[in-house]
Image (cartoon, rainbow, N blue to C red; front, top):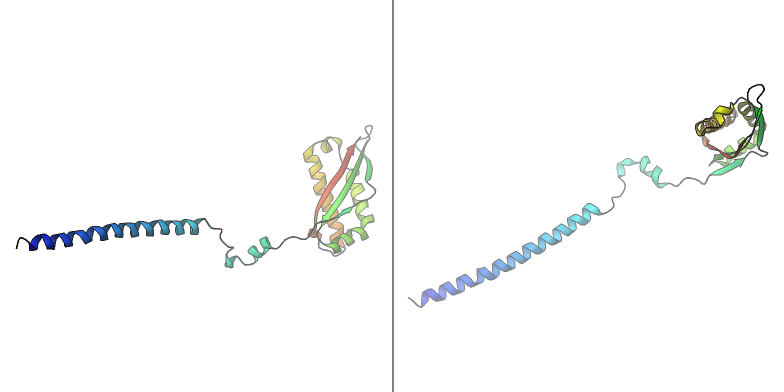
Length: 170
């Protein structure tokens, strides 16, 4: 009986150690692989949500190239209070992405120029020397152009911007 005990104990204790080491290696490999997959899923770029619909399409669709229309010649007006006449020379360009709107601006340039000359002539020197004053004049210029374009039936918001490419006060 003494011979039987050592034989039964030796084979019974050896395999569990090998199995436990193998089991630990397999568990560690699964944890490492699982962690790698989890990190990849967390960090990969996400596609746009399908339910966003038109909002997602708006970000994907590129805008049309801007089209600029330069009012030529530059505007030259006198302005200011009596006794202190000043002169303003400004070159103006309007921007749209719609060729039909640019054509409306061209076709109605005399009316637009008239409104802008009146607008520029009504300015005050102290206002125009500040950056905020120039920005306000730019916004008023855009509004004046949009008003004429809208009166002719075109979509006024299609005139997206107005830029002063030259601005001289004397």
